[in-house]
Amino acid sequence: MDSLIPQLGLALAIGLLVGLERGWRERDTPDGGRTAGIRTYGISGLLGGVAAALSLSLNTPSVLIATFLAFTAVFAWYQARESMHDESFSVTGVIAALGVFALGALAVTGDQRVAAAGGAALAAVLASRDLLHGLLRRISWIELRSALVLAVMTAIVLPLLPARTIDPWGGFNPRQVWLFTVLTAAISYLGYIAVRALGTARGVLVGGLAGAIVSSTAVTVALARTAAAGGSPWPLAGAAALAAGVSVLRVAGIVTIVAPSLLGVSGTAMLAAIVGFGASGALFLSRGRVDGDGTEPPRNPFELGPLLAFAVLFGVVSTISAVLSIGSSRGMIATSAISGLFDVDVAVLSALRLLGQSASPEAVGHAVLLALASNAVGRISVAIATGPVRFWLPYIGATIVAAASGYAAFVTLPHFEWAGLLGTPNP
Image (cartoon, rainbow, N blue to C red):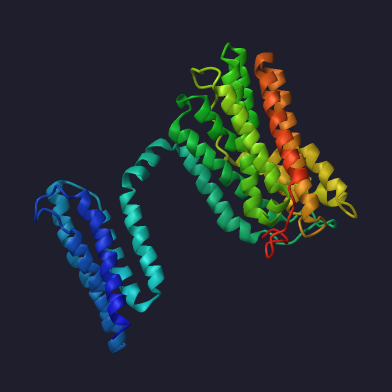
């Protein structure tokens, strides 16, 4: 009995939480003009808890089942009458009530923490109606289809891939390669969503920072072209510097997720480089004002073609790194430097996957930093090729400041290892 009271209290609280959201949304409806409000949803949760308690006491699951069916019938009937009166076709209220009843029963028969989390999640989803509907209006069918296809490939194909290396050098692990490919695409998709949600019309700063999560090189090219077309070079160079800082931040995020132990080796250098890019970018932006977009919307990173090309390139580079790393880590570092010119994510992930296998944390940390430096050289090259001197000269200066800051932090600050985190990245 003592344990039943808090369980029923939780069931009631779940109903009241959901009812609070439902009642607030229909707060202008006169009394008696809606099927359920805060009191009805609260009672619905309590009813689910009481029905579950009776089923346990009588050792008869049919009591809970019969009560649930009767509750569904009564609530749906009243909701149908309200819908006909309001000429509405929404079934959200019925589904929410069924969820409240079920969570109330779970609070008595199952894990109370799960029931509480489910109640909070249900209320949050109901409260996010405008946000979710707005997202659906903005997203295109191609974007939705690509995301769904990728989800299917991840949930179905990934478990079927071999979880071991299939080459004699231990470099190509199909499941690991695909997992890292999905991880990179997911991180890039955050930037893509930011551009789609905010719109590139918000200016080069918003577009550049968000687009850099997808591709800092593409942002640099777009800004250089804008400068060549007559745009203000200093603030455009500042936006490019900030985009480069976001690129380093993205790599730091990948390292944190895949192999956080490396932060003791390369984390301070990456942080110093981010500060260097940020300070330089802010200084350049203060010297002028930019009108227009300055960036083009990035391609959807969930497109299958580029995604599969990334996976193939990643597999090839991983295999080459494994071959060159046999007996020495210099081959891995050299591979990171070369591949970083074209794709920093491929270079970094190829190095990370060798952690604990044929490379030490110190060597992998060096490879990550060298890949970032190599990618910075690649960005400078495209900036020089596509932009005017007044654009790429300050951009080179910002890159030098960031590189010097990172190098100073790397050689002066101590390196350390995090106990319990050192080891092979989780597959």
